[in-house]
Image 1: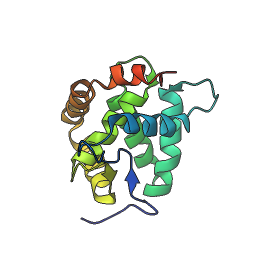
Image 2: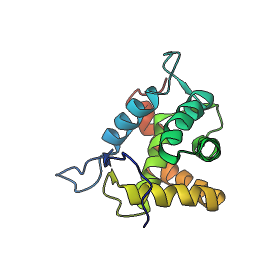
Image 3: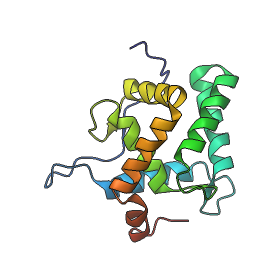
Image 4: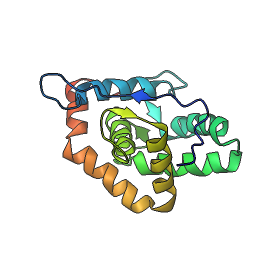
Amino acid sequence: MNNNCGNFKLVTYAPVDKKTGKNSINDGLKFAQSEISLFDKDKNGTTTINEFKKGLIKNLKEKFKDAEKAKLVAKLLTKLINLDGNKNISAAEYLAYTMFTDATGNMDGTITCDEQEKAENLFVNDPVWSQSQIQRLYDGHNLAKREKQLNLQG
């Protein structure tokens, strides 16, 4: 694949639990909460879709070197991962998106440049299917319930 990842680094979001051999959902939720909190500009503990979209645009402009493409992808991604429609991005929603991105390759708890690019292409080319898969991961792993149990909701 032709990589356009710039300074992309491998992102480990959910290490494999040595006892179970499965990715740690709780660690993934904690990672997701720390990631979305970076977008919480007013520091009220909640990341709104507008805060998230603005932060994404800034990050994607650096990657794409194209402001219009960055805006398009950020707008689409924000819409795709706001699964409950409440105008905020939760750790559970962000983790479902992260898991979807990882699942485009080897779902091992680490996102590679290739997986990130494949996911971005899927978001743009088939947003309906992409959102259905993100929703499936969200529901199938009971991410909202687990987030609440960890007391991560803003």
